[in-house]
Length: 103
Image (tube, rainbow, N blue to C red; front, top):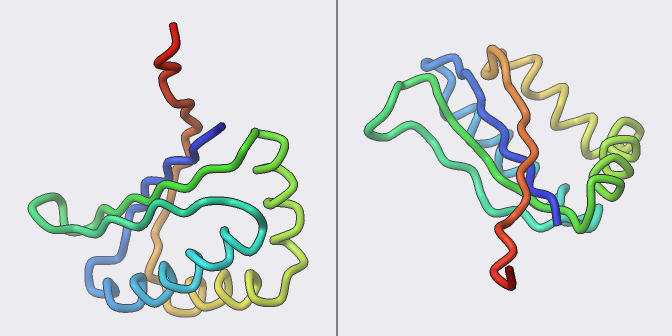
């Protein structure tokens, strides 16, 4: 399993727009076989930071999702929404693996 951790730098005046964007992506990740663990929004933290986590069985499955998302109309609508609303300033992706408790 591989988990993608995405850290977003948001436009603080566009948090409601980011929330709408985030709500759109949860079922889209699941549509392509992933498990979405949720989005986490600013609270007692910097007002321009959010994160999300989602997992795929393997990095190859994640890469297949990324390729399919480029031509999927729902994904493109979500991308365009964020672009139009300018709610995301930048983001960074990190890939993590769970600790194997057997060893």
